[in-house]
Image 1 (cartoon, rainbow, N blue to C red):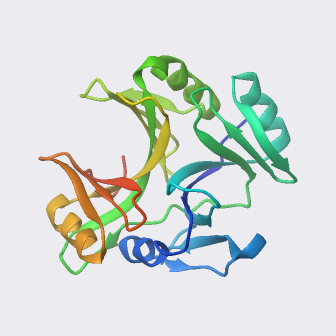
Image 2 (cartoon, rainbow, N blue to C red):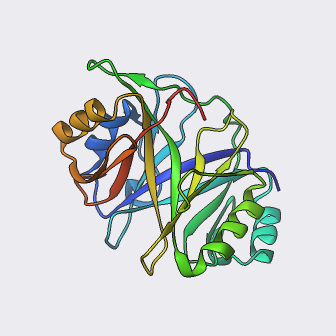
Image 3 (cartoon, one colour):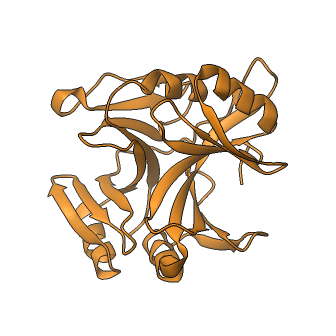
Length: 241
C-alpha cells in the first residue's frame, strides 16, 4: 500500500463556516457534489487540491483525513489488518476508524501530484495548511502512533517537545501528520497552518471571524473557526518541512 496523496476534510453541520475557510486559505469553492451537495473542494490558485468540506448530520464541527491510494480494497485489507475498523464502504471509498477512534477514509487516487504553494498576504506574511494533527489520548498514544506509522510508511521524526512527533511523507505530498499526545479521553483531528509571522497571520484570521483560544509565544496559536472547530497557526516555514 502506497499513499499517493492526502486530503484534509472539514466536517461541519452546515455551510456557514465555508466562507471563512475560503478566505483564510485563499482558495475557491468547487461545484458541489454528492447527496444534497454535501461535498466540495477548496481549489488553490496553483497545484492540486488537498482540502475539502463536507456537510455532516451531527455536531460538533470536526475534521478527518483521506488517504488516496491505487487500490482501495487492497489498502483496506492492509489497514484493517493493522487494527482499523471499517464503518462504511462503497466503490472507491472505505470509511474507517483507527484503534484510538480517529475517523479516516481510503479513496481512489485520481492522479493528484502537484503540492499547492503558500499564499502571500497583504500583511507581508505567507501561510499554508500543510499539517494534519492527530490528537491522541496519552493512554493509547504508543499504539496509535505505531498504527499510523505502519499505515503510511512515512518517516517518523521526534520533536523537541515530548508530546509531539511527526510522520513526514515525500516532499511532493501536501500534508504531513503531527502526532500529538493529549490529556483528553477522545482522539480527534485538526488542521495546522504553517506561517512566517504568527502574530500577523493570527490577526488576519481573527478579522475574518476566528477566536483565539491559546497563545504559545514563538510557537503556535490555537484558534476556533466560526463553527467552533479548533485549529492552529504555527511558526514554521510554509515553504516545506
